[in-house]
Length: 135
Image (tube, rainbow, N blue to C red; front, side, top):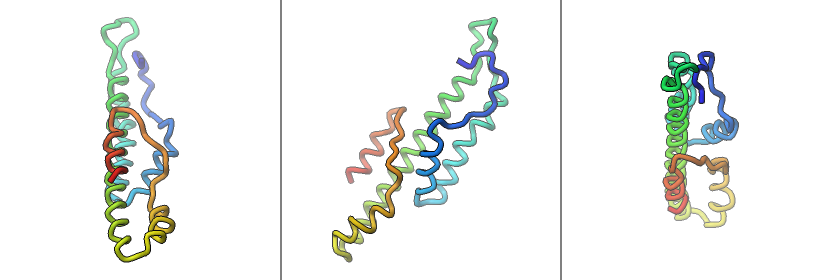
């Protein structure tokens, strides 16, 4: 796909705004920093990745492969972070429900702690997110 595209050195996310909103809402600074590093990693890798040769169909280069691997890695990490976030949220809700009226927890506390509702799809990682939601 990117064969011969030597000038391809930077990638912007199509759904970058939703992803950045989700990252900003994560509970852990470590998760936020890890996601930011993962997103920016492609722009460090692409300039040094061979683009392949238009005249030789066997030399497809590595840019397309590197981008596919990066997308899968970003998806895997954000789904994992969201699942962890939901697990912590569910644990906190359970603890709060022991001390506060259930309606206070459900109407006032949990909505404040929820992540944006955007669902990140692809790579088969949605199961981890669904499992955390069910708990």
